[in-house]
Length: 562
Image (cartoon, rainbow, N blue to C red):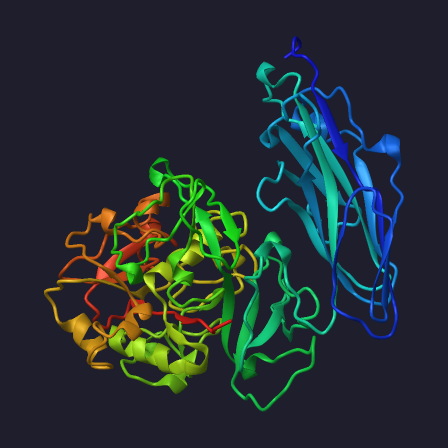
């Protein structure tokens, strides 16, 4: 390392940004603040001023050499403050943008640059130690009430792994701050790129206190979720919908019928799972991927595709997860817990095989609804909230949840629980986010039936239960979105998977059970059950015929249109 030539690194940093908003009425606007910005923007009666007080000799770094992380973190860094000096609350996003200088020298590749960002006050402190952001360029997002400010310290350095081949190259970047006033519209998070929660009809947005679990109605004009910090959006359906709650008012548990968690639409980078668990790379957004150099069109069954096909997809490319395409939505709500049976006082009392929509509850500390045939599970789920496109969870939707959980937006590990068929809550280790905002009980409670089956079954049980609801269920194209179809015949037919369903791509991760559906037991089970020990896990999959059993439960999904 000593004989390396020094590498010039230029970092353009804004030091102080002041957002000033004055007036009694306000129009919705966005603004971008970049280097050398001194301007005023007036929209109607709103006046916004940006003041740039950068000091020229503070944002040029020269003669940088490869540095170890620990040593780099000891440097002073660059401090900038964002202040909302007006009377309007504001959201902000901080980006690091690439700069390409008009020089003959080659630009240093981003992956050789690392950064650390920390706040001055520990409020949601990021203190990131990451590679230079190469996807959305976002390094911080936040919310500032009128009069508040926040100070960040940014440290950037050349990674110690940079070799002699990188000599004489340059690197340049600049901070860009995007501000957006908080008005009467719904709060959005920039990294979701439009895939924010859809709130319709009787869905009530809520926040959940991390310490005691207190539920309050969320003020949707302010930050109530933040996926960047593994805080997923939650909503509830009330038992008595005639009762209304003000923003930030406590909603008593006895008036909550069900909890749901939002899964934003995303594409993920296809990976080779043979070498074991890996962090899944996620990009949120509302657009579907297409065939290109770095992405591929999702091989959907609706497009004459079938399970096992890859199309133009290959490891390294990004692909929109199929769970979002079949319903044409920007995300969906997943039952926060396994479906429970209302009023059951014991595990045995929750074993009821009937259609009874009025008995559905999705809450903590209730007994999972078991010993119910798959057909009755499906009809209960379908009839639960027709206005919100309720349905029984599909195999691909299970995959969408666990892939998001195994990214930087979740725990990025396996999740297991061992409740006596009692839905969890107090133990955050049972949540896919490691906090109260996540989904609970996706392993180790009961096996969960999901809507995914293989054709050519030799048993009539699973089919008759579904076709009794709708005679042409398997032929009517309007019903295809409610299930995933495979053509496997043996429990090792992993190549028959659907990309994104969390089967073949992740088989045997964490030694979770990995048995594909077969002709005699055509329906998928997910997650394992409480006596399954180390074979349990969010990646576990198995099979059953559609019969009722005391170890089998189900989960409900809502897919409201945008």
